[in-house]
Length: 410
Image 1 (cartoon, rainbow, N blue to C red):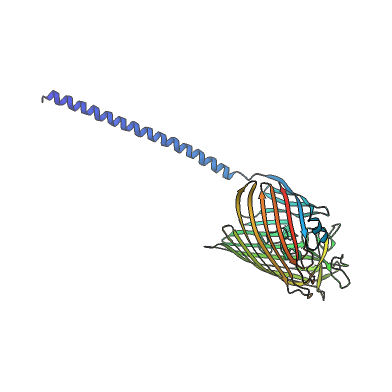
Image 2 (image 1 turned 120 degrees about the vertical axis):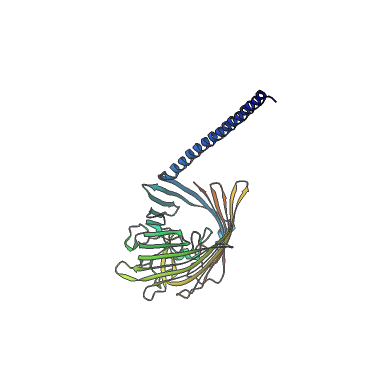
């Protein structure tokens, strides 16, 4: 092979190698450009997300409410049984919730045929990420939360003022951090402002509260002649949460102590305490609570209470044991979206007036279909308010109530 031939081959090879090198560089450059574009798009997305996270929460107050109706058929009302039960208007209610200038507002006003009542009305403010302060007509921290009962009728504890109770005061709430929660509260008066409150009728209230002493010559449902009201109440609730193979268990202890005033001087003291536990395992929820209360006023063994436009009577001292179980699931059956079946049991015992024990068992179902929500309850009870009896009754037999409460919520 001549020198010129070898030079031609080498030159051609160089051109081919150079061309390949240029092509390879161009491909890598295109790849880098595409990656750069993708990175720039990712940066834009992250910046937008960061801006959304740092944006203040939406301010304003939302208005909601409900309209509810109630059907009942009772063994203690023969006329109602003869008619196959009756339907009554239950309530119309207005709810306010929201936040303005970082201060939250929560309120509910209820309109019944027989009364208009403010269930709760308070402001809240986040002091730190862990602590919140609530001021106004506030829920009293006591017992199992968020659910102490499932049914429309609640447990016997409600009828002595130890479930679904709201009083005027200040509450400091610590959220569930490090598996524990703490509520500390001071309540100056009950929801009517105490013994000198300006309420037109002391029995028109949602929460059950002490309103007087029950003398021997008064009937169970009479207006008490000797007024009485709670004041300067301290309350605390502690709960600890355990996560394990069988779900989440919360155990806790609640206590409250306060004074009783008769309008002239301090008439005595009252206190209550409760041990409570609950467990959530998938759709199952189980809860238990033991409660004791004591109203210490001279030699009186019975106390007059009021709520729901009526007076009633309770023992000055008693214990209660409540327990319940429920199972809930999401469904797609016509308009139905949620379904919960439950059984709640309550026993009031050890009463200071030696009246008979109170028993109540509720087997029921809660049904949700969009904005419509209903309770369907079958109640068997003895010496139980709203089920043909009273907490100081001496009935030996059980009464029965079949009840359906239907509401439209908005």
